[in-house]
Length: 166
Image 1 (tube, one colour):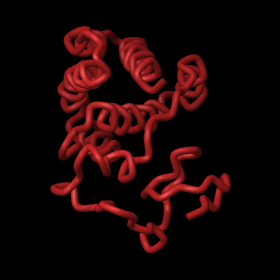
Image 2 (cartoon, helix red, strand yellow):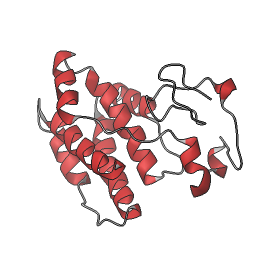
Image 3 (spheres, one colour):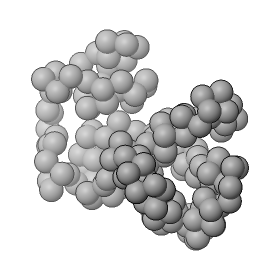
């Protein structure tokens, strides 16, 4: 199908070029394509998930400052989805529920999430035959630093994801 926003041709739930979601009725299965999470294998994994977008860390930080921190929620959702994609999580929690869990638990889930981000990024590094960095505990400690800790932690996560996306 052709993306109605950017014109890119693809066959997935989300456009790999601009990230726009495809209408569910227009996704055309091909070959061993499946939307059942239990049946997703490495062969059809790339077809099912949209991929990773390399983001400018500076632009993300500026957007966080301009929006008084609201962009952090979008950034967290994107980081979550992209780390799930790179680490090939079998039953991942998608970005929107992760953000909502963090809001509803007054940030307690964010502590767990930041540590698990380090674990997922390490898993993605091992898939790419790179040594793990064990940054989960550093992400967790940085989240606890007032004011700038979340931005620094998200920046480090985005840096690792940008490296793995290439």
